[in-house]
Length: 102
Image (cartoon, rainbow, N blue to C red; front, side):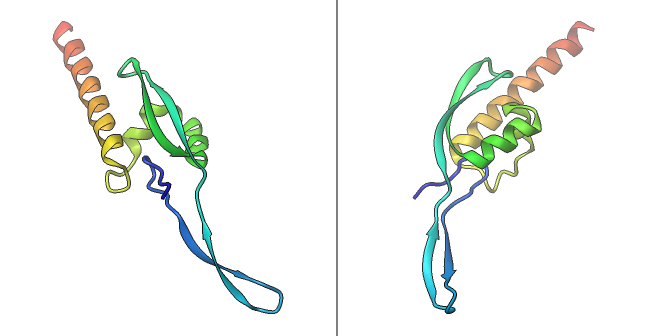
């Protein structure tokens, strides 16, 4: 089923409760979209399947790179983890390059 690659948000089974208190099983599926994000650190686009609520929080936190670096590794997919590792390597390489120049 649909699962957000950054936050791990997945379908949840709920009960719909009527006025007469009859409980009916219901599956709440997150709105997952295939989206391209531009990574400033990598200088390229990255395509991930992300929930729309995650896109909103991503914009609120200040961009794709910052959001990915703050995320916990346990909730992220393997594709998202590889992107996170690439971003951290690129940032460390830039920091060491600027430290050598100074």
